Length: 320
Image 1 (cartoon, rainbow, N blue to C red):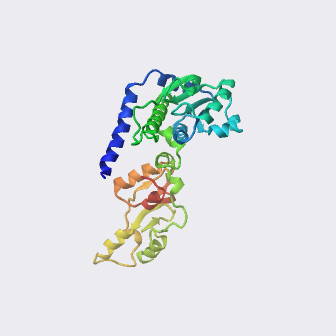
Image 2 (cartoon, rainbow, N blue to C red):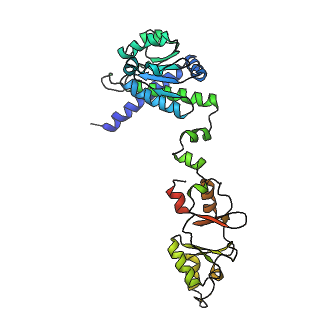
Image 3 (tube, helix red, strand yellow):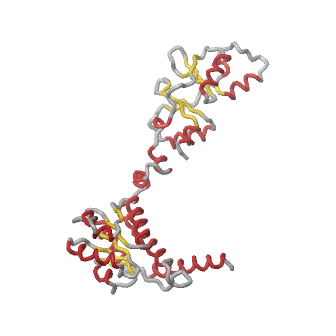
């Protein structure tokens, strides 16, 4: 059995249904967007079975892109959760047949409370379609299922229309990258836009020693700090140099190497620093990559050390 061709056919059938739907889009999509946009309260998405599963995803997408939305099961609604729907809300109801018993039972209660209803169904002549204030068609010519029965093309189209609504509303609200990140603070974009240097820099157990400290002692401090570097300060505790393990290796290759010489003699006397711990960690990563370094001292304007930021800190925090 040629499963590659079977899979290819499934994708083609569903793609064709999406293309057909895109060509047949009418003014109802605009009405749906305007209704949701003007909703003072929440958009409640509801549906049964596969439609319910798709509805839950649509609600989650809308909620994460600026539209206050949640999913409710029709059965739970008529058994007490109807109180979660109130004046100022609107409902997006999904049923391919437009005749799902549990959903149909809910419709009179929505009308009683004057809740605007957007329907996704195959036919506007269905019970759900007749109740709807705005009707979006999920009519298809063919399911991808070989029996033409299991929801495949129809659920794909429903999901895609939900995405279309979400994107239209994002455009309507001028929803920006920063807005998306605020809804996803734990995601990679949220970290990129919100995590600052001060949130992840190391501030304790710093490998700091005086610049005049003999290099043999500075190496011990460097090893104990486990950062591959030692921060060298003057008598006023201001940063004047950074001794790296690379500096030590180069020093050992020098025939004039003296283990008693001050660490500053072998260190970098013009180390890269950042004096703004409010800077985004993602910008600090760019700085580190630009200068091809692994560690950077975070100081105030007077070169007093506030902490250090190692590339490992950024990696562990998921900054990319």
